[in-house]
Length: 90
Image 1: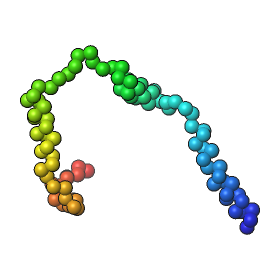
Image 2 (image 1 turned 180 degrees about the horizontal axis):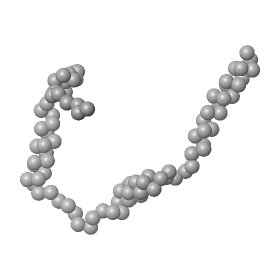
Image 3 (image 1 turned 60 degrees about the horizontal axis):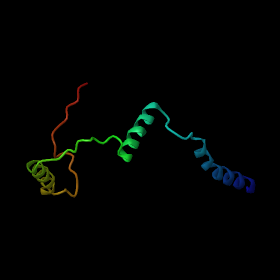
Image 4 (image 1 turned 30 degrees about the vertical axis):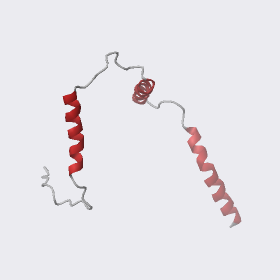
């Protein structure tokens, strides 16, 4: 029984060592491309030299759209039957 406990403890203690087997760096070309874009954004290297300014009308419309979302109450519970029907094609 004591040997069983020891083996269980040793196997549990060795579990974190599995995380060390993951190689550093991107795992795929897509991940490498994504990390490149995120690096550009964080370092502000791809910013446009031309500032994009919104007019007063555009800012007002954006503010109205943003405020409009607060007019609706969030329901306490979601009623799945409140919406329309979805027909399945077999």
